[in-house]
Length: 215
Image (tube, rainbow, N blue to C red; front, top):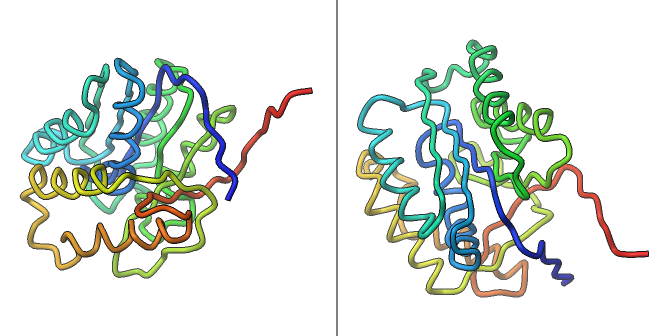
């Protein structure tokens, strides 16, 4: 297992089609990054859920998942499940985000995610952030679209437990969903940990990666 670090990070971008996507897919990675890089700038964009309970949940949750960070969150009001029909609005939101930040790392959905909203946002990100490392996070769901990841972020047992606790604490609107439970979140993290020689991990898809290994 080869481990590569990114060195000092000054800023990251995290995007989700829906409130809770970022936390489910990359919440442990955000906790790890923010603890390791105090004061890091986090530009977060969510395309749906704005103006109501879901936005309130998201703001409280991401504040908890990004302790000590300079968090800048925007939540739009695109209708859930309809991103393809609102492509211009979604593209405009991503382009506005891109114009205001130059991150060292981008956390986004996978381009092969089965959900049309996730997949559409992922494809927008890889074109807007052409010269950046984009890590595509995974979200477990009934579609059965989990694949073979190409990158892993190991999580300490404490971080994995903290992620689950924060997910349960900050998204009460999702508690009725049959897959939204401790077993699902920790189970996937345990599997990805086994694959990366760690106790727990979050896994990501990497479409393109440019190496700088020195001369």
